[in-house]
Image (cartoon, rainbow, N blue to C red; front, side, top):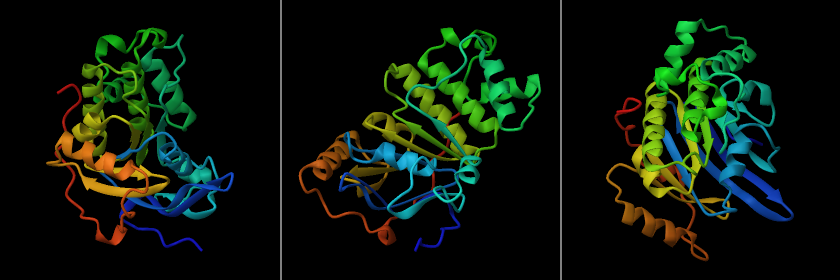
Length: 266
């Protein structure tokens, strides 16, 4: 039987277990992301990061436990869960023949929304897309610009949560810095943000908490504030070596206040 939802969590994994070929890809994972928090998941290939995101999106039926979005178990009512969540994959797909402005209005329309021109442009600016890029065809956009449109779409549709898979892969340092600002701004608007990443500096730059996944279990769950890059790297290596430390007891985690958000482009 599924555990009861945590009313404070927008995203909650409780005892989430996924098996493939007799192997536990996720092994009784417990995780909670409240509104206004950016939570990064670090881990090697096969640790279970992307599987965790897919569970929240209702792309799979777990073998145990549940992934909840706003209290809704995604595998029981995927449509209700997806109405509350926005997903940015590693490569954000936009219609290349449409501008960023036109893409936002099109995708908002699919969600039953009809933002006016000024409102759509305001969402794009709030996500950090420069006004001069609003009317350029998306075919000429960089990865970072596509991500900004994706964040703007999430804001426009009123999503309660934003999940991202390897968002900084292929970004230069300036674009990664702008992405961090955009995620902090989304959290400041009340979104729960969960990202799967290999990027330790970026995780430290924008996350409130950093979880380290190893063999489908949460081996560490750390407050990012005051954590030095070298210290996080040492913890990561310790957690991901053979065996690793015991999994985190969720009842013993500290709950620091979210960081002060930075404005996009700041």
